[in-house]
Image (cartoon, rainbow, N blue to C red; front, side, top):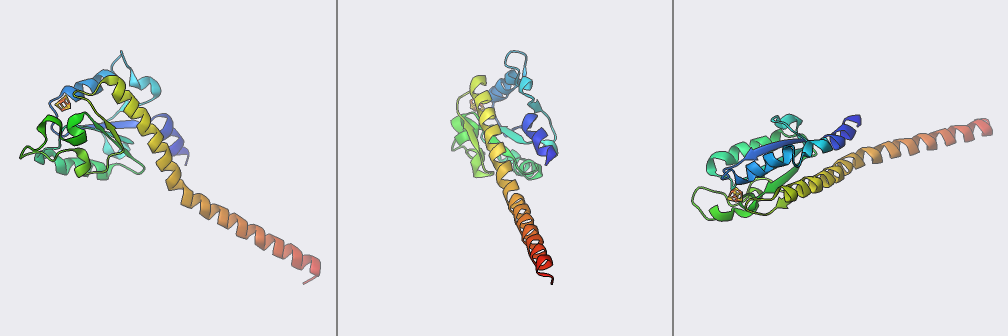
Length: 173
Ligand code: SF4
C-alpha cells in the first residue's frame, strides 16, 4: 500500500494521439514546458503504459489507432484514469461522422474526465489533470475497501476468540 502513496504524490502520465491534428498535443506539451510546468506537482510524462496512472488521449480515434488505444488502456495497472482532451477526443469534433473515425474515446474505453476545446487550453488541461488525480484517489480508496473490511473482520474475530478464551480461563474450563 506504500506504493499507492507514491502514486498519489507522483502520478505518471501516458499521452496518446489517436489521430488528432496535433493542436491539442502541442497544448499538452505546453503544460509540461517551463511556462505551466505540470512537473512541479510531481506529474511526469512517461511512455510506459505499465507504469502510468493517467492516460491523456487526443484525437477522434481513427480506425488505425483504436486497437492500440484499447491495448494501452488494458496494459495500464488499476486504478487508472482516462482524460479525453479536446473536442475530437470528447466527441469526434470537426472529424465527427467521417468514415474513418470512431467519434470520441468513450466509444472504445471508459473516459473519466472530458476537457473540451479546439484546441483545449493549457489551463483546462491542468484542471482536467487535477480532477483526474481526485478520481484516481477515489478509485484507489474503493479498491482498498474490500481489503480493509477483511482486515477488520479478521481483527474482530481474533478479539472475539481472545474474549472467549479469557472467559473459559476464568471459568476454569
Ligand atoms: S480538438 Fe481541435 S485542436 Fe484538438 S485535435 Fe481536434 S481539431 Fe485538433
